[in-house]
Image (cartoon, rainbow, N blue to C red; front, side, top):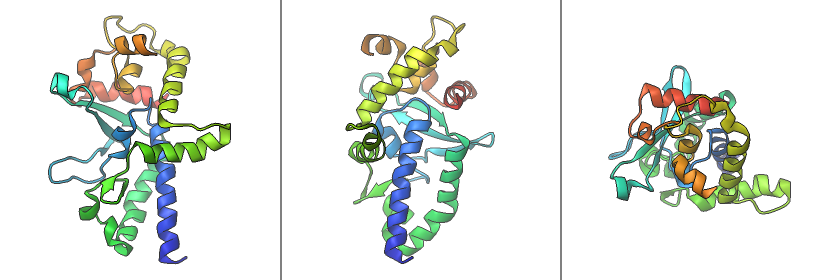
Length: 214
């Protein structure tokens, strides 16, 4: 295999990895929350990938309400075993070798972004193209990022929310928070209090670990 073939294989793998993390990292967040994950600290931004009690955790940031609340919401997501093994092997073995061959993939050039091209992280369009090709082609119609979010939320609210029976009715539903909106918004549009997202804590990680592992 030549250098070009290896780089092509890495890019293909990253597309599959993006789909797996988006779909299997719990309820799907907005595309930009996933495509901007960092594996290393940058000058003004901290990485998003951590290990918690032996389990790989990614921490996504939800910015849509920042203008109103002046706060970034932090959402911990725990990956299934096979997906986290793929990510660890990529970061430990594949990425260093790839960066050795391609200076454009170096940490300084990529700013530590897991998915990076043309001097910027991947965006919603990149995720949509991957979903359309790998999932949409198999079910017979164009499958976008927004389509998947609506379908996943609908299935979760109909068939999975019952797993939260017995929770405090005054608290927000963790399933809704994992999709980056409140239960009130979820009820209008298609429990744990929303302030659980203001910072990472044992409580927030325990709550979302349960949601992701189901």
